[in-house]
Image (cartoon, rainbow, N blue to C red; front, side, top):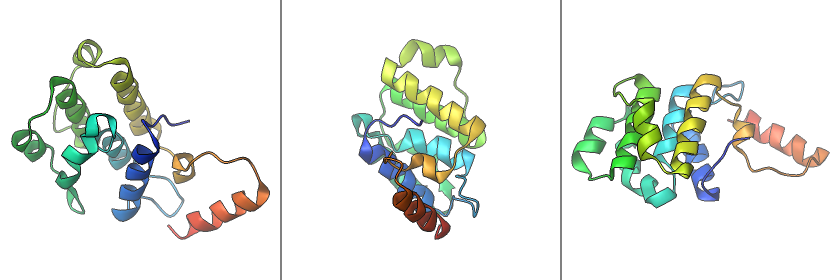
Length: 146
């Protein structure tokens, strides 16, 4: 089960993966984008509003993000982690994450690392619904479109 700060956080990630065409035909999300977007599009402290404009169809502009926007220390660490998980362009140590992140942001960092390592199917990003055969069939049909 993937932890999201709230429903808007989940929707942000899912929408961006779809918009950027980062869901493969088998339904798996691109691990690199997924882990970075999971952090960058978090609604905690409105991080998504600060980072969204630096994400486009060509990539994610981490250097520009950090140089043109003033972020608190903990958010800088999360952005550096997102960059590292995306393309190893920035470094952040486990000690930095342990010492600067609050519990919720630390949990988000761990989840992002897990998503980068294991990936997930897009259905795992959808809201949980009761296991009703009609709904499962509709979800399968919806996934085939992506």
